[in-house]
Image (cartoon, rainbow, N blue to C red; front, side):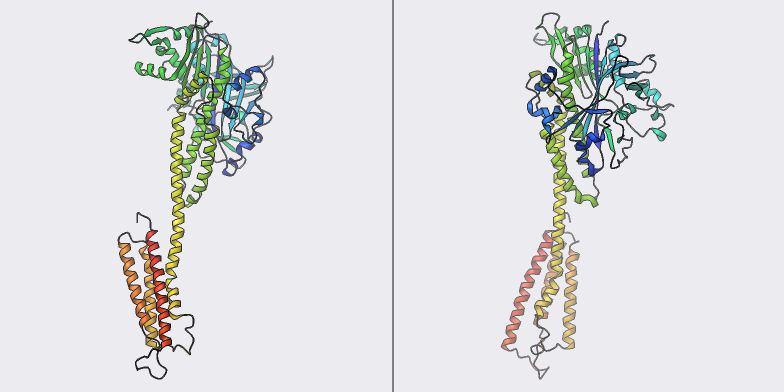
Length: 596
């Protein structure tokens, strides 16, 4: 027996979406949405001692994001659930992977199925599987289990019918089945993709959606499905694959990887076997047959960058050395070792690190999608952008402070490994890009708010300009124009002249609105011309005599002292009105968009 044991965890990170009015409450009501007959809430407890060791491994301010602790009410970030499995002496829950041209499927014992839901409305579903069957424990068996067992829909479809035949010969399993209790088996053979027009709209397989049940729905291929108020849509974060965690104990392979094969030119740098080992590359990058990189130089570079080799050869316990070699890619976290006890750390501390980074990645993608949706709102919905951008920024601040951490452990190895995972999965780069996206959205929403305020100010200014004529008339005639003992009625000729003057003033007032559409510098030119003509007409009307003596219409008008005082008052009123009009015109000019 070459291989002794392996442990596989298939992780499915996803996003949750529902009707907008329910999205803020989704994290609170998720307990009621899950079927209580199949899912149970699993708050973290310090007992047994292994749980305590896992808990204190992490810094205290990060624990609320890693564990569903009972005392986190009001500040809860994560809720953890576990699917009910009935393992008995007569029945063992299994995860079966059928492969084309293989007589018997790979069968893995289902230790547990976990579900972590975060307050950013993302989650991670985990299948925790033991491989303790000797006949399927060879190195190539481990590669096939990882490659085929992680698939959730076809990577491509062939041109021949059935369309999935070509895919199943390359990457896709014939079927994946999960039996959690006697008489309860969830199976998907992916045949719905052979006829997309009929039944291939739902993207996710039944062995995932069957665990959730109602009211959860699978995302459709064209992403056009919209949930009803009581429904929740599950969308994958990765592509057609789940994230793979695999712990594999194999003494012979470990020796190949920790053996010193060379030194650098100065003899100071040890070159271990893993930097040029094809199996380690396939194991790390989840290839089932040949390495997916044919360039030897690039392959060596990738192995250096994606391998964490602090404990590749530990001679502290004598010879042979203990080997713990870790590999991280954007869709895998693997460990190849020759010691049994390392599985405990793999399934606890390291598992928590991976879950956290996947939740961070899913949350970043959800926020990025949120930004894109707000930026793409149609013009008639622009008024909603500022309000929704504020809500987005509020949730993003919570994420940065409560779920995204630069460091999570005081242990040196924990710090290095977490940093290595973040670097490979590009968490820091994506957070930085998201910062820029949200900053641009803030600028965009500010522009929309300023535009709205400017439009309101422009409207008020135009109203003020339009009211200039009534104001002028009131100021010109005064409030006692119908007092017959002071003012005589004007003649028909005078009335016609005054009316024509008022019409001209009205046309000039309309011209103020027309200049709003004229581009600079013509706008300024026409505005000045209109202002001068207005002043000329108004002055002429003011100076035109309408006060006459009572006995003769032909003699020269004699202006008495009281009339002079009244005329002086009107001139002062006109000057004040002209100043107001001039101010309104300037405001209109100043509030025009710069591109006009």
